Amino acid sequence: MAGTDRPAVSPPGGGRPATPRTGSGREAVEAVWRIESARIVGRLARYTGDFALAEDLAQEALAEALVTWPREGAPRDPAGWLLTVGRRRAIDAFRRRSARDQRYATLARGLDDGGTTSDAWAPATDDADLLWDPDRVDDDVLALMFIACHPVLSREAQVALTLRVLGGLGSDEIARAFLVPTATVQARITRAKKTLAAAEVPFEAPPAEERRERLGSVLSVLYLIFTEGSTATSGDDWIRPDLTREAIRLTRILTRLAPDQPEAHGLLALLELTAARFPARVGDDGEPVLLEDQDRRRWDRAAIRRGRAALAQAGRVGRGLGAYGVQAAIAECHAVAPSVEGTDWERIVLLYDILSRLAPSPVVRLNRAVAVSMARGPAVALPLVDDLVAAGSLSGSHLLPSVRGELLRRLHRFEEAREELERAVGRCGNERERGLLRRKLAALP
Image 1: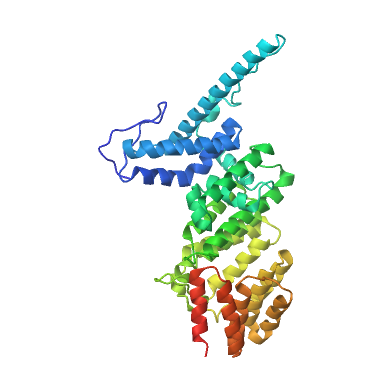
Image 2: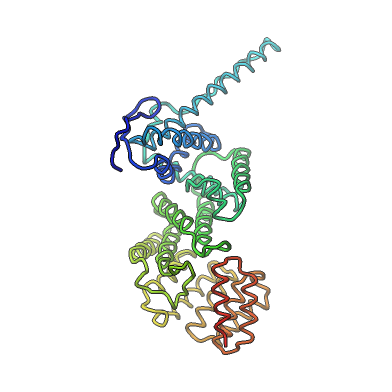
């Protein structure tokens, strides 16, 4: 940003003078926070040894920046400024705790002359360890990922904590993203921090023998965040780019921090290849555009290249693709196809067969049935969907009647198709997708 005539300011306690900035100071704070919050929280957690305290200290530093930067301009080293403020707040907390412990010790001596005084609580690190070291901070971000997705937390708490601590999102933003009250998000985060404290979870990545299991939780949360953003389960927007961007950004970080993990690369490939279609998935009016109607010239070719490179890397570092890698391979089939008709649907069916063995689920079986309908016709696919209905799978979901209605339409069984699509409309929670289903209904003969 270009300079202004505002005077330069220094971060608390000295440091390099700030370069004055143009534009909104609040915007500068928000931009820096979104990029650097995980590093700052991780560094403070390393310093204090207390994850919950570190998150609170970072939030206090953010609040001070929101007051100071709009008035005096953003500093040259915004992350260092925020870290310095958080560190000073930590020192204040240590001093208060030390004074309290000394008072307790004095009281104890008065009750028992043989008592011993309490040592003042002090951080285990020295001043040199507080320097802003990007390499060390990356280690801290990795530790944060595993802590936010610790198995003692519920999945809802893992998602909220990941978005708060690693994504830099506020409680209001998380609440809007998942259409829950802000108080609910705040309660989840508070409970999560108390649970971690009660479980005495150390600030460190887990040992190698636990890392695979814990990595699965991290990947699962990032996948869940992206999935909610790519096809919102409720609300007025079909795609929520803020969630998908955060999931991709955090997954990129994870692949840099854990470059030897094939499923991290597989997930990144899946997210990139899926997001590449976003520019054509929604029309100018915000309405969904089906795959067969999308203008493939609008697909993000750079994202496709990044996704294919990540998929290739997953194959290089692993012994065969995992579940995320197989899904990425399916997305690659779509990305390289010139049209729906030119798509290698038989390969997609084969990949779904593999995925069914790696990660069996009713959704995978339903998606395979869709691929079978494209490769071999709706008459072959309908019994596969009927098996899911008979098994009671996906009860309450709009996906099953939506797919079944489409197959029946293609078989010219229009009255049955109408019943299924009406059922899908009643179950769908997203207004944009409901509109799409209503248009399918209206188009039936």
